[in-house]
Image (cartoon, rainbow over all chains, first blue to last red; front, side, top):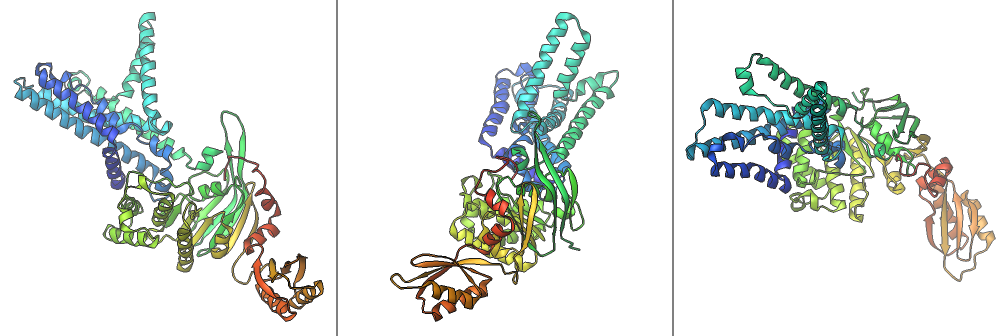
Length: 237
Length: 328
């Protein structure tokens, strides 16, 4: 992990007006709705996907397409160090904001007389913490494959294909396809279902699934980056 | 220990997956660059110069052959710790200020944090970028300012190997003079400099040797260091209305060891063996009563070398490249 790269990424994301406007919307609107309907509980704030996308879209692809990586990799920085720093920077920022939003939800619910139980609140906060790092890992991988912000198109495309596959499987009764679509869709949104772990028969299964997905994404991203050639000469011809 | 740069039979081919075509960007390139040498790379567009830079910096993988810098692979972190690079197509982190950008690269270069502020201030001063401009966001920089900041980052930490790809591209005349002075300073500091530039005069002024690259091959390597004098053509003009005979011009040429190439009503072209020959020619012309008003070299020394040593390269500069839009 490279502290300079992590801090520079945070600064770059927070100086993007578009990303900050989107973040404000994605964080603020659920809080307002929760204030209006506190009995709805945590379902309004829901998943952390939106917040994670603010930081993760174009996480590496934008650097690839802009050309800044040539100067970066002329420095004593390993490509694996760059990939992991990007993941940590996006994951940690998503997690911090996700946890902060969750804390505000709990506060609003409490003030509005619909205080959640401590286990329920802790589960919600914990799941958001891991979800941020999970989605960041997926986007790190997708972003090494396509330049610019093509990673989000790829991510949506995979989700769409999984959705179609799921519907087709249901119509035809193909359980293998339903399972494959479910697994692929799940791997695009890795999360750690803490409630399931706490009450399940095989508590380590979801945890190992989450960890293996994140590890696989990061390992593949490092592999792809190590094989990437960086030169406008190569892109031209 | 610094052992310089060794490029041994390097080959690089770009393959286009969709069309199935291949472009041979480098074809058995071999070079040896000694520590402290200022080495120029010139050639027409599409010759493979930028690809060679990409391989030297470890951005591109070679298909065959080997490159070592101080005995290490180009992408070894030990090499990158002593390397400075200014790319031709300079893309900086546009959201940073010029000073932020330098401090960012100072940190990436793993230079001491305690000297960061002072080192960056010195680098900005060296490239002539004032503190007010350095405090502005890079997004609003002109091309010349970008080049100055880019050069400042390349000089951070006094690297032993400096790769400059068209360093004076897009800068104003004052910037060109500044860059020329900085190149002179780098040469004096003992750094090994690789310079890719289309500005032959700039290359001629600072480089010890120069390689002519064409079609992915090194066509010739010429020494430009002092003592390596080459033949050149000088154009002599005389005051209008004066009568200057062929005999007088021939006599002066013979006395100076030069030869008369051609003449007109008020000027003549002489081939001289070297700079001293040009000086002798001027003295001889005055001695035979030619009212000389102007003497100018027809080509710079490097242009002469360019024409003499690599006529194919020279010819290619006036015709479309064989690899349009390809590796350069």
